[in-house]
Structures are given as structure tokens and as C-alpha cells.
Length: 167
Ligand code: S3P
Image (cartoon, rainbow, N blue to C red; front, side):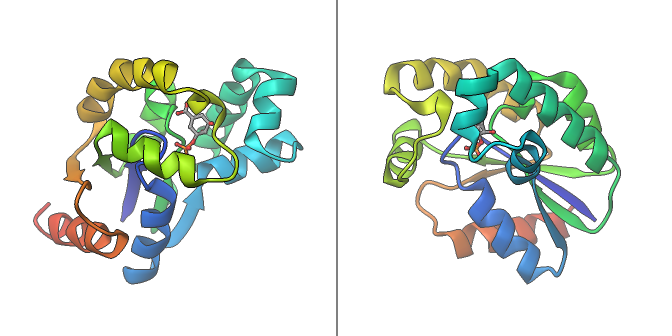
């Protein structure tokens, strides 16, 4: 089984992926972590500010290619994977893609709890524009949509497991 979690920044992909992987005993792959490792930078904001978004996207593409087809894994993606159809081709091969859907304000709250805000969520207005552009892509690429607004991480992970059973 190969499960790919997609969704906007602050939708809970990494946290849910960790718990889900533990519950169903699959390996966890965190794409942002691999991209960061590959970049040699200290954090993702540094990649964006020193190397630029294009460089980040190139490394992200290489990571998606490298992990393509791997089995028994839960993959937490970065929020921007859906803007590159080639990345989505790599990710969607033999996988079930789960979209963690959430209200924009909920995601904003979660992002603002973090010490360092992600580079593309520095201000609400531009983040909202990016979200509006991507919302239909997340839907289009997903096999399962989970509404996360009034659920905690455990409930979201359990709902994914439940929905996977009927797939
Ligand atoms: C991005 C989301 C981030 C990270 C990078 C770009 C995006 O991941 O990949 O900052 O374009 O939405 P998270 O969604 O895990 O924050």
C-alpha cells in the first residue's frame, strides 16, 4: 500500500502522516524533509530566500522521482506538489491520494502557531490567493477527501483508515 497525503500548508499532512504510518505500520516519507536534506540548507525558508522557489521545485521534483513507485509507505507531501503534473504522476503511481481538506482560516491558525511561517504563507492575502488557485487541483488529484475541520489528528487518521478499507 502506498498512501499520499496532499493539502495546503497547515492542513496537517505531516502530523497525520506520522500517526497514520504508525497505526497501519507503514514507513513514513516526508517530502519536505528529503527536499531540505538534498538542498544542504538549514530550513525551507532558507532555500526559498537564498536559492529561490524554482530551485526548491527542482529538488522537490527530483525527490518525487526518487520515491516514485516505493511501496508500504505513507508520503507527506509539500503543499505545492499539485502545481506540477509531472510530480503528481510520480506520486500517483500505484497510490491512493488523500486530500486533507480544511477551512482556510483553520489552516492559517495552524500555520501561525509555528515559530517559522512557511515561505509562501508570510501574509494572509497572498496565501489565500495561492489556496484558491490550488483548491480544485487538490480535489482533482485525490482519491479520498477528508474534511478535517472539526477533527483531531487521531480522528483524521482513523477516518483515513476507515475509508481505505472501502477502496
Ligand atoms: C509549500 C508548502 C510547504 C513546503 C514549501 C512550499 C507550498 O510544505 O513544501 O514551503 O508551495 O505550499 P507544507 O505544506 O508541508 O507546509
